[in-house]
Every structure is written in C-alpha cells, then in structure tokens.
Image (cartoon, rainbow, N blue to C red; front, side, top):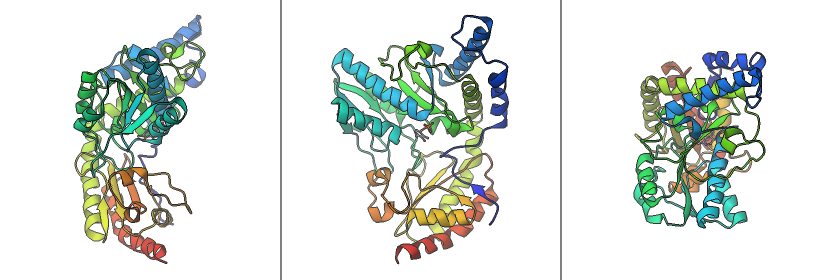
Amino acid sequence: MNERKYFDYAATTPLDERVFKAMQPYWTEIFGNPSSVHSFGQQADHALEEARRSVARLLNARPDEIVFTSGGSESDNLALRGTALARREQTGANHLLISPVEHHAVSHTARQLADQSGFELEFVPVDEFGRVSARDVAERLRPTTAVVSVVYANNEIGTINPIAEIGAVCREMGVPLHTDAVQGAAHLPMDVERDKVDLLSMGAHKFYGPKGVGVLYIRRGTPVLPVQTGGSQEHNLRAGTQNLPLIAGLAEAFRIAQEESEENARKYRPMRDRLIGRVLEEIPDARLTGHAVERLPNHASFVFKGVDGNALLMLLDGKGYACSSGSACRVGNPKPSEILLATGLSEEWALGSLRITLGRDTTPEDVDALADDLPDLVAAARSFSSQ
Ligand SMILES: *Cc1c(COP(=O)(O)O)cnc(C)c1O
C-alpha cells in the first residue's frame, strides 16, 4: 500500500501540538472543580473564565454569552430545543424554520420537536448550490416563528450561506437566528455582531482542537431552556462539571484557527481549485456540488453519474487516500444524501458523491497524486456499479 494520505479534514482534524501543550496542565496539576470555593477551585475557575473570555473576544461577543458544551451536536441541540421550548413558553411561538441542508444534529432535533412536541416544521428552499437566500427566509418568517436555523457553511458541499443577510431579516422580525458554524468557524473569520446571529454552534475537533468539546454562543436576552439540568454551571444552561482540559484546548485551537484563517485559506484555495479543475476536465460525467466561489477554502465535492460512492471510497482507501462521500451512507444500503437531493440532483447522480477536504498537512503534490489516480478509480467504480 502507498503512504496513506488524509483528505477528510471536514470529518475531523488531528490535534495541533500547540493545543496539546495548552491542555496539559489541566489534566494533573490544575485539577480543581471550578465550582469549588477553595483555592484549587478558584485556580480552575480562573482558567475556565480565561478560556471563555478568549472565545468571546474572537467571536466579538461577551463572556456571559458563551456556553461550553460537549461538541457541535450538543450545541445544535441546545440551540434548537432550548430556544424552541423557551420561546413557546414565553410567546406561544410554535413554528420552526430551517434549511434542508442542515447537519443531522439540527435537522433531527427539529424533526423530533415536530413529531413529539407539536412544533410545525417548515423548510426554506435552497438553490442548485445548496444556498439559502435571505428573501426566501423573509417570505416564510412569521410572528410565531420560534427559531430559525441555517448552517453557516455546509459540511457536505462546502457552500457558505449569506448569514449576515439572513440575520438582518430575522432581527427585523424579532425571531432568533441559530447558525451551525461548526465548519464555518474552522475556516472563516467569525463575528456575531456583523452576522446578526443570536445563537452560534462550534465544535473544537473540526479546527485541530480536541474531540468532545464545543461552544454555543447565546446572545444576551435570547430565551433558552436548559436541555441538561442539574448544577448551575454555564449560566444555568448546561449542568455538569466543566471539562477544563478540553475547554482550554478549544480556546487555544479557536485562537489559532481564527488568527491563521486567512493564511490557511490562501494556501488551500489554489490547491482546491486545481483539484476541481482537473476532476471536471479529466473525468467524464462529473459535476461539482455546492457553490463554485461561495465555498469553504479547503473543500471540494463532486458527484459522478452512475457511480456507487461507497465503492469509490473503498477503491480510494485501497490506494491510501482517505476521502468521504460527505454523508453517512452505509455500505449495502446506499441512500442518496438529502442535501444533494435538495440541490436538485437525481438519485443516479447523488449516489456517486465524493468529498475531498484539505488540511494543514496537505501539499500540492498530494493533491496532484490524487487527481492523477482519480479518473481510473472512478472508471473502476463505474464498472462495478453497472454490473
Ligand atoms: C461535525 C459537524 C457537527 C457535529 O459536531 P460534533 O462536534 O462532531 O458533535 C455539526 N454540524 C456540522 C456542520 C458539522 O460539520
């Protein structure tokens, strides 16, 4: 087997060495419970609040608007469920408006609120690039909309949404806007004032931080009911002793991701565009999915007509390339991605999806090697699929 090459940075990233170092004191030395009154507790609490201030500063938010969670999924859950239930209690609002290109952490939460808690769930349409328009949101907003949720940048197809425009129309209507920025925060400069968002989710492992820790930004005054009850940690919104090593790691990883985002984007974009150009030129019946320009700098995604996406992933893996189909479809039970179908692709195309995401260790040579090998691998996957 060739040397293995990782092209799946949208699934997860390795821990940055600087982040690993920043976490180290909090496993053994500074171990106190931040809620304890004594000096051990105070020392831990000081570190916790320093991490909170750092994250807040980078988001252009206030420290009391930052809630640490166990990851992007939990942040999405708290944002959707917590806000929907609180808004209904306060105002009777029972309408949920989300895009059809949300991560399952949002869409399955919204679905459960509809099925089990009586909310009315409505989907705002997307264009062929999987992009939501502010006008389409404005047309569907109601005084009884409890919360709107639109992904900042899509994990499967890389498309970036016009969140500031969507934020403006939600603000005008007085409806809270949540954005899942788990991918966006890893690559784009974040600013909750510029974007007029009320709730924003992030997860550290998508930006070279540890797994199992995330953030939910909650604008002051946004009604949210706790989803996890118990102690009064995290402004009474997320009970449980904070995981200080992971939180310190998240803060450091987010600082690095935000400070180095432009430099990284400058490095990734030419590689991404060369890869996209070569694939579309050299492989028949291939299409780019997502937006060509409004897309994550490290993200290339395609569909190949008449290809079994899982077969292609296995052939790639056999050559040492770790890629993704972009969605969690299982071998033997191929189901087209809802996100690709929402962009108007037929099943025949949508089943042949491939996501290639670049990261800090990717070189132009790696990208060219992959582009060299891909035409034959797609042809091989095609011949399987047609048997
Ligand atoms: C990875 C991801 C999530 C889930 O985050 P976890 O930290 O793995 O729970 C949610 N939304 C998007 C867009 C993601 O890419």
